[in-house]
Image (tube, rainbow, N blue to C red; front, side, top):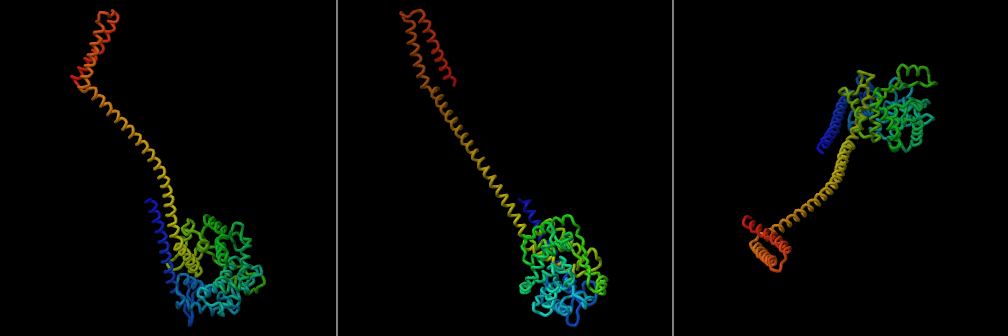
Length: 465
């Protein structure tokens, strides 16, 4: 049993080590983000690429706000309050949010969703003009098929945009109740786009990927779908993680027909794209699906994220030398949900394994005890038989000793001598009487000789015991 206890001690140490290590990484990231905060006269925020200097952007600020709140920074923090003011003031005229170069042309679905999620993290009331304006833009941006695309009503619904929109509309209970129809339409779009394997791609007609499956899973869970309904997605992810490399996946946005050429050219020069991080996304989805944080498939995901931590921020393999704010928020969210899973189920699973082994050992011991008791009963029967046999032999020996003592006692010998002598005298008188015939005399002589010899032998033994 000592070997099993040593194994369990090691497992508990690994859980504690992971929790401590993640806490240290998040503290380093907190310090880095605070150092990269760009303050304005009444507000402030972060750039999309944190290593850059200059004015903040909606994308960088929203990602940094969500990351800091996930790390447990108080919402009364001065930088978070300044960032909230910046986001509310940075909304476009149409109500959404965009990249700085496009803010006068159109809003972007993903930038709008990230900004609204950050405001929800800061508990900005849904009736606030900036929040309500963003929600109005988002609900109006929904495509007729129920999904969302890169921009408003572009007819090019995709999994990532739709998933983000559903997460925004379910982040607040009051908003969720008002937007139930839009949420259900988005859920239906995602459900129709699910592949036969259980995963999701960019759209329903494209191969599934870990990142898109993770986005869809997170959105459907937020919309109230039970974990059991997403079992096939979880199983597909586990299989895929065993064979696919954890490399970033870049999704490009194709500008739809019907928009002005100047806008299209601007978007092409901007290279509007979304970089997916499969390790972070997979870890988020698996933990939200209730996957065991100590499962063998989870460790490599955590190690990949930890390995890319550059002392303060997270690096993306395809973009060396940069500190993308979206990489920070994805890593923070992934490690945070993993740490919480360890704290709630990691220790529990270790103790459950200990209990299972103990129960198994106790069952085996009970079985061994039954067998041992049966063996003891047989041995007791044999011992009892041996005791009976020994007692019988002892009784026989005692009887033989009494017989021998009786036979060799002087009184017994004297009695035998007298009886034998008397018998010899009687026989002698019969043999040598005048009436006896010659044949009878011969028989009598033989009869006399035998007891006479026996009498002499008794006398001899009595003389030499």
